[in-house]
Image 1: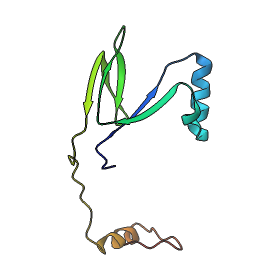
Image 2: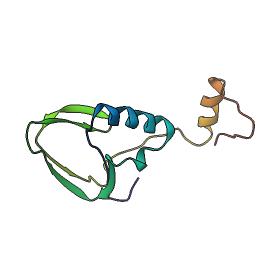
Image 3: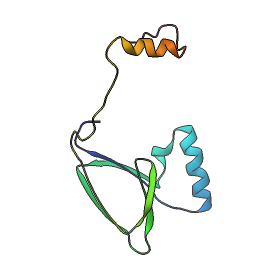
Image 4: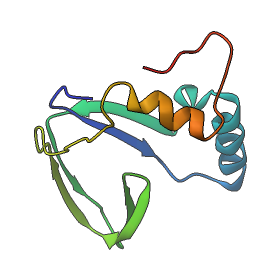
Length: 105
């Protein structure tokens, strides 16, 4: 998560049969073995589309169609807030979350 690298995932568009195969692979955990799926890590990326603009998804949300996309890492740009130690278990108990063998800290 904090490795100063972008986690890039690409899924090429294929035939209708490839779309069915991809959907099946997503639900069975075999997406990484498909020839149309690519993943790699990089500190920055410059993507250019040949032809008409295509939609890009960033963090799971489609943000419009573009032909050029520049990405880089904003190191430590995300601030995470969490409850103090001890209060988290009270929150879990309030919502009835009790599982055997699991303790909240």
